[in-house]
Image (cartoon, rainbow, N blue to C red; front, side, top):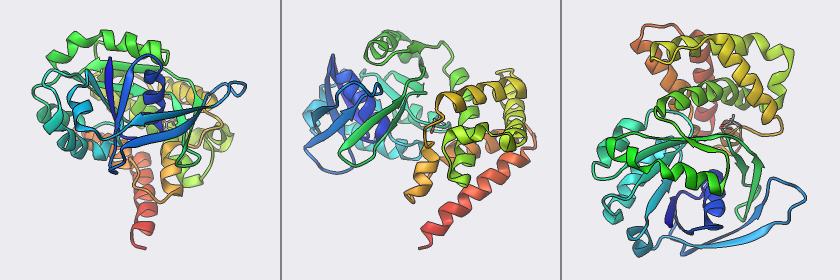
Length: 301
Ligand code: KPL
């Protein structure tokens, strides 16, 4: 199959590289480069690194793509769709994968002629330099349709699973999206504020705060139609903290590198939905304010 991966961040490169072992892959990026080259460092330390080179930003390759995978940040999705839409083949499935929620309605409105599929992944990757991609952790990927046309593309989950397992299809993608939102609401702001690795949150001193965050998220998630409890989400979060203990969360990396974070699509989305259900979420609101203040500091510079 022919894929275009939109976005050359860590997750885009990871999926692009893995898909390219069985398929043709082309990248679409913000810069006008014609080729994207990087070394890929596999998750198993004993395995040797590979150099990968891909064609980039070629309109004909986008036009002939059988599937487009968008991996930009949540706040860049709308612009990315505007950029690719003139070259997108009607009927080509578009898979959108990012942290957080809130881009779905506009993506659906922007892509009336394409199957729209959302994906969420717990795979972890890191770009130590512009020319390197390190696969830092394995994790579950979920995929599911957002519109009727998308429901005919369940086979894509199998194909992604062959590239980088485990990947499964979910008949209601909002369910795994809410679970991932809970994990990101708990881990991302705290690790960005305290500038620590995910694993440090396993320390007793964070236990109460994590439980409070999870309780608030559980109330909102349940009100959205996905019943859960604070204890359940805390157990899930603890599991991810353990599994990714060595990682720096994406929000921690964004704050360190003075980039815009996805806070408005993670905690901000939770706060908006809480408001709609008249649920108080003071702990999450405080975290949102703290991250906005950190961003403000470097935006003012
Ligand atoms: O998704 C993540 C992120 O960093 O954005 C987690 C699961 C927290 C792993 O670091």
